Image 1: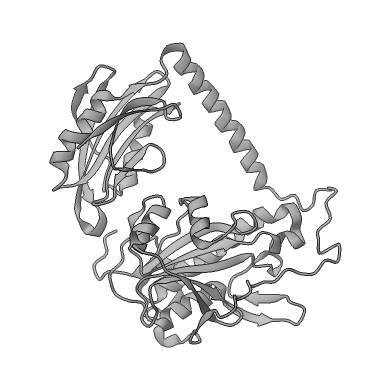
Image 2: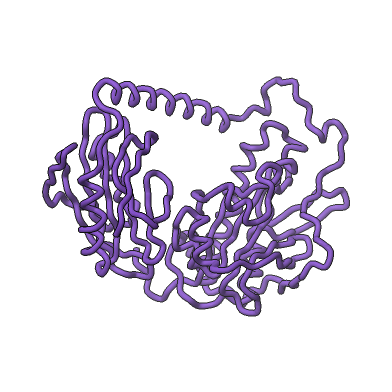
Length: 405
């Protein structure tokens, strides 16, 4: 295993990184062949106790106990190790080293299968630990930490303001609806010679859990899926439950199975389909007014592609079908102007909750995903990233017979 020197001013460290591993977010590196992961980063304004919570990223049954100490040229580290379940229920070892120096906490963490762990411990974890040292020290480290804290606080205040209602505040803007401009289309137009797949109407026979109380009580985020196919009836039901059109008026106003501010419905539904009976693998778009799919394209190595686009989250690539919702903001801006972004975010929550409950009712699981590679995913779907862009995704698959809490 080759290791290469690196320096990362953003996370405040320099050290060694494994060659051939993919860079993720927040100082994370992953080996695609077996989902082994290495995390290295410095975190300003955090204690080691707070940093220890990062280890919970790996769905641990408990926070690990300290197993020892390790002295390097830069630090004396506290060591932790625990076993957990990794991809495909394989047992993974999670090993971490934590240390605090002034206003900064530092972490080096390895997650690997029991088979891969001994070699990676010697060839990756220990060399990374020995080499890691801070970019900032002394007064400079304190100054950077203080600046980062202020930047974060300012950003939080700004973002919080976006959450506040401004519809009742006197401003100079006039919406395009007020100007008498035409309502934008509520569904994307089809390309000539599009390949269309009609969908069956929702049928109660697909329900395995028709009790709404049970669906609400049992709903949870599920990241483990079996290899069983969804039926076309089940997929049609999930699409109807999330974006189905209940009533369309001649004026263009319409009502769906989910609420939307002013009935504006800014979303398009894209599907990455891998295991649905009667449908070939590929990317589709749902046409809610016609209750049909339009086939768009396919791509090689879709499981790996989707895992990478979802910031290296393997359960996204392992799903039977992944729902990807884009927003066309002007559909909402036509009526609500600068207030639109706030209510669009509300609307997408309504939509995904319907998917959770509908999936639960047919023996499927889902998990809303907000961490993804924005520009790459937009490009993958052919979106311009400005007037239409991805806003949320949720993989769906059949729930395995034995589920762990």
